[in-house]
Amino acid sequence: GDSVTQMEGPVTLSEEAFLTINCTYTATGYPSLFWYVQYPGEGLQLLLKATKADDKGSNKGFEATYRKETTSFHLEKGSVQVSDSAVYFCALSDPGSARQLTFGSGTQLTVLP
Amino acid sequence: GAVVSQHPSWVICKSGTSVKIECRSLDFQATTMFWYRQFPKQSLMLMATSNEGSKATYEQGVEKDKFLINHASLTLSTLTVTSAHPEDSSFYICSASFWREQWETQYFGPGTRLLVL
Image 1: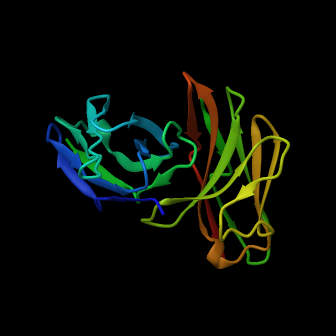
Image 2: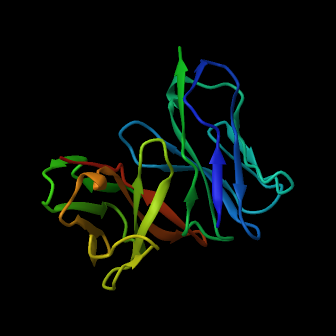
């Protein structure tokens, strides 16, 4: 079945550091790919998505590119802020839908001032 | 907009009792509601999907008699863990979806932590 593997945390960075959280997936066909973020005490929020190969999703300075050849969707940000501290989840779903989501295990990010 | 609430946020109960968790979409009517379970340092696992007024669809391995789902309205779904046991202790998360810009998006609640003693 479909699965998502993301890098284990926790990840601790200083403010303005470069962030990469790795995510790879296993799926048949061409799934849609997502990054969700969960701030303390809140529900998961969609951060960005990509629906086909070579698409780049971006939001709030975060980016991720759908790489079919490496089955990856790594999350990056050039300069993190304290307010980016959260848990980040990579996920996939059937093409064209965010209905049947398969999640990775989440990566805790802490950004220190 | 698109806020989903859960109540309670945490609950402790004795083994053998039943616990009800509410999930509400506060400012929209949800097409579908989903219930997930998350163990520490593991993925969110989909338990069931429900539409208002119809029976929930459970994922393989999820006991429907153990985890009762009622979807009474377009803004409210409840999950009842019946005769809870310590192995049911977990973090339960709901989401509600609706169509926006030709895309069905899920909006997640903050989760309910259940501890069964």
